[in-house]
Image (cartoon, rainbow, N blue to C red):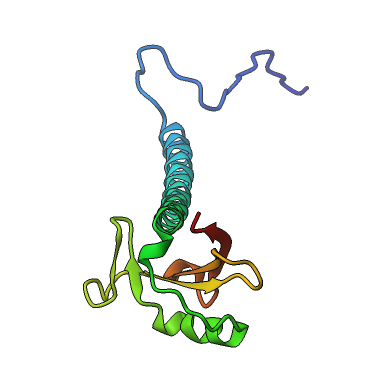
Length: 161
């Protein structure tokens, strides 16, 4: 005759005995892993946000400086030196990105000698507009280290009248 026990013992994993307090080691490790994942994701997001913010500031300053130059030229065109050689080759020679005469940063526009470490360069050429007296074609060229080897050209027409 075989003896069978009618008493069943149930063991529940992770169950706490009465009087036990605190967290199990597994719970603490899982909570730390989740916390580390959240911190890593937040750090990565903040780093990307900082980079985007920096490029937006540079872009805003770039646009602002071009607008300042354009407004000065528009309002006082007769005070600036005009290049009467209106050929594209003459313009390109004067607007060589390596030899632009003005430097700029987030503070303002300076002569290159005053701010050799400025990340941006700026130059412009004023040429007579063909066959229209008192009308000038202005070319503004802008470079910045964040743009690499490329540059931005802005062209507009100014009248002395």
